[in-house]
Amino acid sequence: MADRQERAAMLRALDLAQSPGVPSHPNPRVGCVLLGPSGEIVGAGYHRGAGTAHAEVVAIAAAGARARGATAVVTLEPCDHFGRTPPCTRALLQAGVRRVVVAQRDPHPRAAGGLERLAAAGVVVEAGLLVEEAIALNSRWTFAHTRRRPFVTWKLATTLDGRSAAADGSSRWVTSRAARDDVHRLRAHCDTILVGTGTVQIDDPHLTVRHGFAAAGLPPLRAVMGTRPLAAERRVHDGAAATVRLRTRSPHEALEALYREHDRHHVLLEGGPTLAASFLRAGLVDEVVAYVAPALLGAGRAAVGDLGIGSIGDALRLRPTDVTVIGSGDDTTIRITSAPIEKER
Image (cartoon, rainbow, N blue to C red):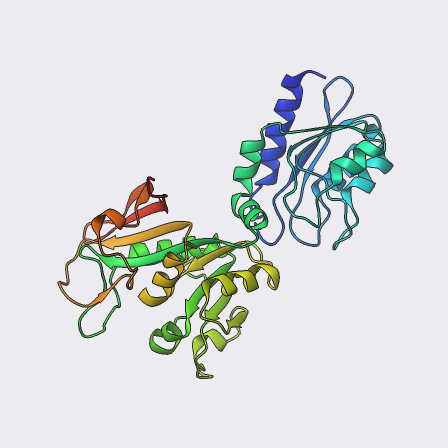
C-alpha cells in the first residue's frame, strides 16, 4: 500500500484521537483508521476515555466484515494486556487484520509488547509513522511512563520585582482577574494540583477548576504534601474533588507516590515559595508558568525560596517558550511559559 495513503490515514487517526471531550487522563488519546486493499477507509474510531472501547475495537466494529485483510493505522501500539477491556491485539487478530502500522510504541511497561504479539501471529507490523506527532498528542502521559514520574508544571504569580505577597502578608490579588481565569484553564489541563500543608493552613485554597474551564473527565486530584496536621474545616476536605495527603517533605517521594499509587501524569505545583524551591533544587520542575503583574511592592514575600545559588553564574536559566499578554487595560498580566535548561559545561 502506498506510503501516502497510510500517512493520510495516520493524520486522520491523530485528528480523531483529539476529538473534543476526550479526557487526557488516565488513558492516552488514541485514534485508529482501517484501510481496505485499495487504500480506502473501511472503518475508523477513537478511544473516548477509561472503561470505554479502545480505538481499534471501535474501528473494527465500524468496518464489520471489511476488517478482514485490512491495514490498521493506529496512533499508539495496540495493548496486549487485560485492563478494564480485553487486549486490542486479540481484537485485531480475531478480525483478520493483515497489517498494523503504528506511530508510537507504548512506553507503559504493562501495555507494551503488542506489536511482537501480532508479528508472532503472522501480522505484518511497522512502527514510527508520524511518531513525533503522536508523542505530542500525549506528551505528559508519555513523559510520565518514560520517566516513571509525573511531568511537573510550576505556576507562580508575582509582581515585576518578584514578590508574591506584600510585607503585611496580603496576596489577594497579586495578578489580574484575567490571569486568575487563565489559571483555571491551566488547572483543567492537569490531573493533579499539588500544594504544601502551609499553603492549605494559611490560604485555605479550594484547588478546583472553576470559571467555566471544566476538565474533561474527573476533576484534578488535590494533593497536599507535608507532615503537619490539617484542620478538618479546610476547603480541600469539602468533597468537591478527591484529596490525597502525601506525608513527606521529599519531592521525589511525593512524585513517586502520585505516579505509582495514583497513576498521575501531570502535576500543577501551586505551593508557596518553600515548596517551589524544594522542587527546583531537586531538579523536578519541567515547566514554569509565571503570571507577572505590572506592579511593584519593593518588599514582601519572594515568589521562590532559597535555591542555594550564590553567584549569577550559577543561576537557574529558563528558556521561554511562550509570552502572552492576558487581559487589557488595568486588568493586564503577562504570562511567561518557560522550561529549565541545563547549564553549559
